[in-house]
Length: 66
Image (cartoon, rainbow, N blue to C red; front, side, top):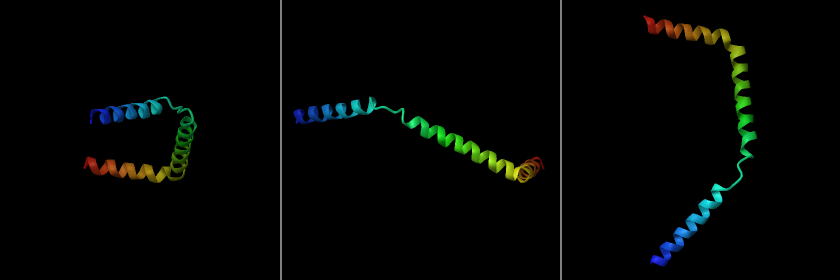
């Protein structure tokens, strides 16, 4: 039984060692693209609905103060 546990431990260590050394540079452009697209969407939505969003915020703050 101890040989089986030793083998399982070695297999686990070998698998996790491979995961630690993988190259993750390919993930950076994807996250940059997601961030830029999200910022762009926020700017477009804010530009289109600025007046309505400001009115909603003013109404919400006004109702809290009462």
